[in-house]
Image 1: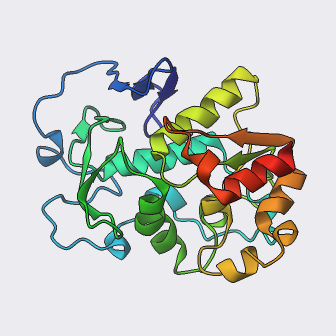
Image 2: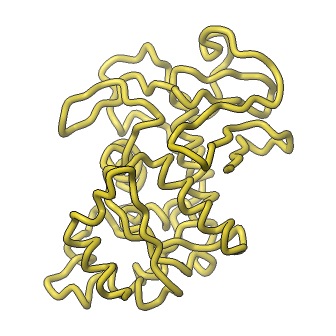
Length: 262
């Protein structure tokens, strides 16, 4: 199972995801959850008041993710890998903005897997109040990746990395954007665990590696010259992340990536 701690606490707080099924359950180390704890306590950094109306992506406070640092420059897109822990921080950011935050100590919050992101909507379907357990990469790109990176027009990896040299990927991720981000995190963490890989193993994931403000430079007419293909050549192998319907096998880019890998 994947245990994801919150904040900088050394205590075993967080979420345990059952690897035997698609179900995720909240595992509390201590304390009980009663009602909406977010309204009874001061909100942690990055948490938005659920009573706010007409929330826009640019209204969010991304300092929890950027740590107040200026973006680093990683000129080659294929060098922009993402650590599982860095993706876990993005998931924690979602929980910090959800309605069901329960503050149990001064330095750590425990999260509800069923948290609702009040005011967060899907720009394609119009669906409102997205759920943490269901939010996908299309929605994360709209609500987090693009607005967070817009001020400096950089990639997400450049915006959150501590330095430019440590993010080089070892594995390329082939997937589609429609699977839940939580499931994606579970998959790459499981892959890392099964292969006994170091904690800071870089995974190349297009949405986080590509500069979403300059996609014309990342995706050119010749597939062999795209950032995708260059990242595949740089990596040790490809991880195919599948949802319950294996939608990736119906996507032309995913099929291309599998064909090149094989």
